[in-house]
Image 1 (cartoon, rainbow, N blue to C red):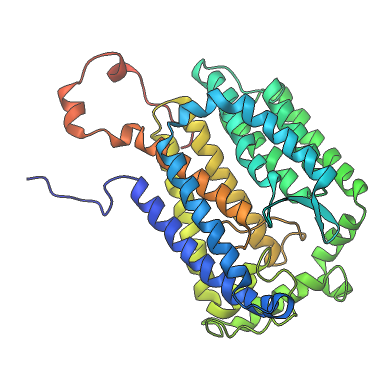
Image 2 (spheres, rainbow, N blue to C red):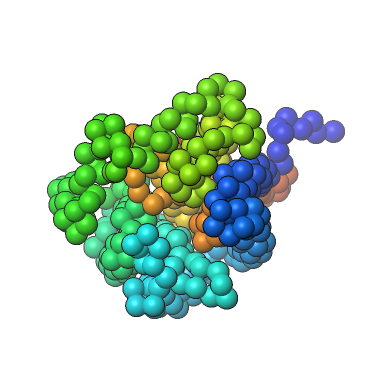
Length: 391
């Protein structure tokens, strides 16, 4: 009789458990952080919660669908997905809904969605497709090809909304994937020289961004304007202390902290659940990233490896940027915290990514029984060394 030595049968189980915990925490936090605003603006304290639950149902359906679609089939439909994405991003600039000076949403049936959020996922899928071919044949990665040009166009269209944070993720995650796969030395030099130029161009395109960067170092110097959100966020986090004020008892959502249920939802979570609650979210996201790396290492082919790597970088990048922004370590940008912040498009994309990740896991070498390996020690598959893109 074989004795089970691990808590999980495979890496898919803990990923689903972690995702479920984060979704529950996010749903509770969405209601707690939004019911005051919902009551004032819509005379219905459950307004945002109801919409969040609808998006959650759609997200679960998307998760189930992506889990049962062989991840290799996405390569077949990528050209059509890309054409649809270009059309959606262009439509946003023409007929999109404008909120707080930014035109980022398309409205369908009273619900708005952000095409740029889906562009994040599509960009890493395109990068995985082209990089996996080069990795398979042992060639250095390159960012000068048609796929990366399309990714760049998506980032430019997103920047025109304007949405610098999302645009940087759209282009940044694929470039990071190429770096992990092994860029040519001269491309490294061009990349390091081009990033400052690109950032300066983005700042010149929207001059208020320079003031946001300045106030990042001393938000109290302009506490009533550009530094207001950062000052209120730090006060919100600090007032929670170690144990927090208690669920629903946070006071900053009473019109003190702007975007308390979206970009700054994590600040409200810290206020109500304290540093211990923040540590729990850190731990959950850290474990999720760890299992993403495990899935990437055990993927069945190079495309699966690169796709899992891209999903890991997407989740990690958004989490780090949002937490750093909320904690005053980064300029204020429109990057949500996966599963915690309110936002239907972000939630659906995150759950789609998890579905793809689990599908990669289901097809990976880790799912093969040890007995099968013992019964079939010979053959081409047994002699091919396992790839390890992520150490």
